[in-house]
Length: 236
Length: 106
Image 1 (cartoon, chains in turn yellow, green):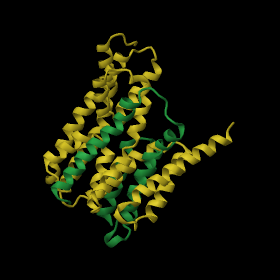
Image 2 (tube, chains in turn green, purple):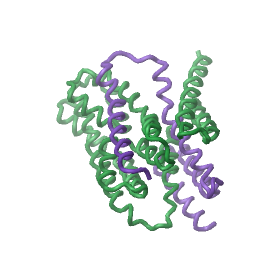
Image 3 (cartoon, chains in turn cyan, green):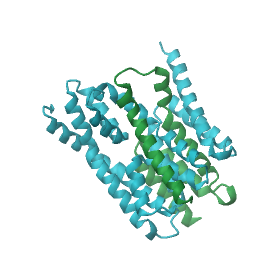
Image 4 (cartoon, rainbow over the protein chains, first blue to last red):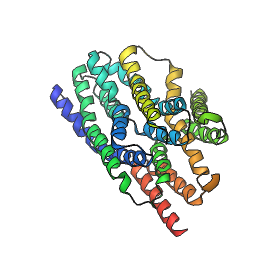
């Protein structure tokens, strides 16, 4: 159905974004639980989720803090995990770059995997949309996901302390990360990037200040980018 | 866990840093194209950094830095099902079920 008004664009976004509450919800819940286990109170958990809105980066920060790494390494590691949002920002800029500044500020704040993926696909498929319709669609995709994100973070923080002690929660984080990353491994360069990062990550465990993660991540990124170039060179 | 000042430093820095990552292109760059090499590297951030973070947690998951076989098998189950189904929930379910069964059986 073609989108004609800004209002219908917004509601189209809300509809398309609805299924993603089932992705965001469990991760927000898990973050609330693990952050509470790590000693954060409800207010700290909520501020964290509200300020950062990035599951993977928040989990990384928790994990690296647990390792007693220097604060600057905690921040750099979590931001490194979040580098992909810079790529999303770049990809959306041709479509939203001409919107008013205040809208772009809000759009940037709300830029997550779901809002990027849905909006980019939509803008590509319907190039006739105007900038206000695009922005409305974009904000629509964020609405339910954000409500669920904050709500489930709160629920996780609230129930976190009441969970049975013998649950193997220490391993919830690796499972969450692996489940996020496995579907992203779509091509051979992705696989090469992941394997190189794992090998370097294991070798770099003794590197001080938890810097190993950043070294391994950089090695994996370079390996992936190189592999992509070499594979492209072979196919005419 | 670190003290409260450290935690707030992390929260505020991450909040500001994440916002700047998201805003850089939308806000400052406008619709100028980006260098291809930069985009090429950014494409592999998640698939590089997340496995690098998880690998030591899986390999040194046992007590005193040893390897816990239940956790390794659970990690492999998550990874295998995730790559096979491309479904986050199927992967989490497989990993969690494997871990819980192995932890209580072994």
